[in-house]
Image 1 (cartoon, rainbow, N blue to C red):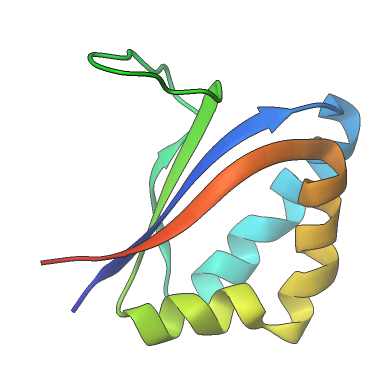
Image 2 (image 1 turned 45 degrees about the horizontal axis):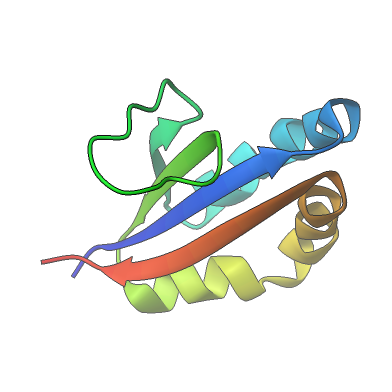
Length: 95
């Protein structure tokens, strides 16, 4: 069953974040992930959406998504993102 990683990101250091953006697509692709949304326009229809950037990734399963997030080669790239932004990230099982 498909799984989705949904991230809300507020970039605090745009130059450093560019390093993350340059490296992460290849790692997502390596784990079979696909971008469904990558920082496009956001329109809040109800409630609050606290971060200006939204990313949605699709993976084949929860296990594959977890493997990507925990992958040794992703850890230094993730550290770049964490140093250059604040955010919320969730993993959601598809239907």
